[in-house]
Length: 126
Image (tube, rainbow, N blue to C red; front, side, top):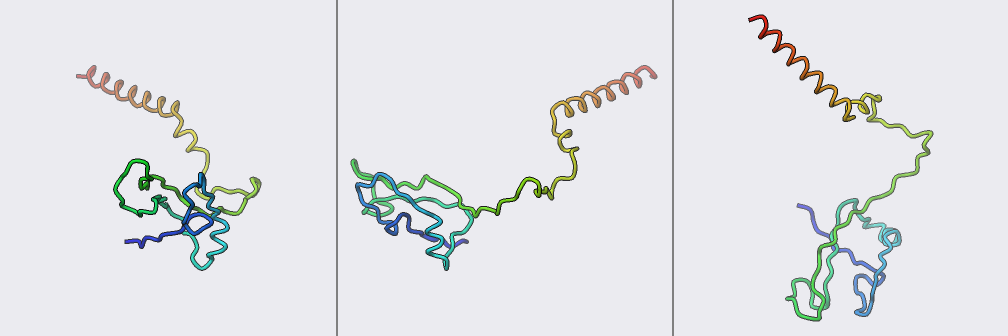
C-alpha cells in the first residue's frame, strides 16, 4: 500500500486566512524549493477543511470538509520539432483504413455476401 503524503498548499504552508477568496499554488516554486522531496507524477486529492479539522460535523454557516477535487501532476517532456518527430509504435498507414467505418462496413458486407452465396449454392445442389 502506498504511503499517503500531505503536502501544504499555498504560500503559507497550507494555512490560508478566512477572508481569502483564492489561493495560488505555484508548483514550479514548490518543486524548486523542495528539491529533496519532489512531487510524484500521479493523481492527487485536494482536501479542504476549516479550523475544526477533517471529519468535523456539518454546521450551518461553517465550511464543510471537501475532498472532491482530484488532479494529476506530470513533468513536461522536452520540445520536439515536427521535422524530427518519429512515432515508434506506428507501422504504416494500414491502421488508418482498418479503423475507418467504410472499410468495416464493406468487409462485413463482403462476408455476408459470401456466406449467403455459399448457403444458396449448397441448397441448390441438394
